[in-house]
Image (cartoon, rainbow, N blue to C red; front, side):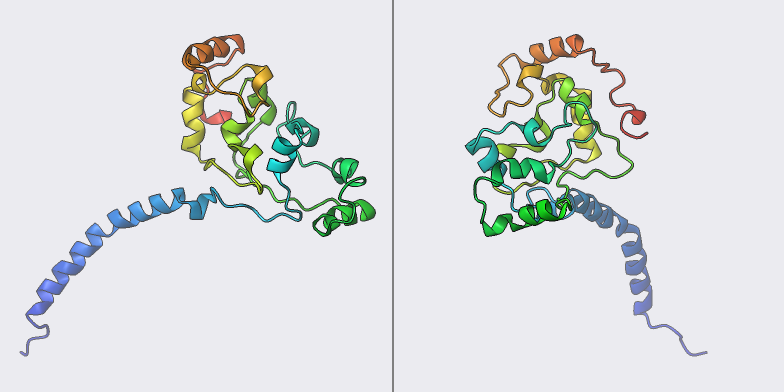
Length: 218
């Protein structure tokens, strides 16, 4: 009977079996790196908006407080987008003919809201409450970064679960007095851990439950 397979077939079979056994390792590593890369998280990537709004100009340049535009941030789960009326408070008087503000004027005339795009957009299965974090002494720039220096807004953190857990498991590293929450110039003191532990107790933060699943997944 004629030989069906050449002598090299055994070697090819061994190589194939070896590749099947080894392949999951680099595949897992690649997927792990991909989910944490800026390609997936969009960290550092400015999001295109209907109007190129500059936090740098409005916050650092003009000194506008976060709460002027994000009116519900202290008491709601959502910071909220400002209505066109807020924009027109100033822009009915200044830069009234600027081309880049045409969408704002059109929104005001038609009554249709500007289609702002969320920069920090969590999945539907994640529950997050702005009001709770602010009232527990978490500063805006802890999550949003130095937004006061951003000509165009982008994410500085991945917002992935491990990032959230780092704070939930050691909140004393990030807390500040409530009156400093909206202060972008705030600098943590040398004794931040001592301050943080005092604030944890003062604000009634249950550190033994902050990493329970139901806190964020409801």
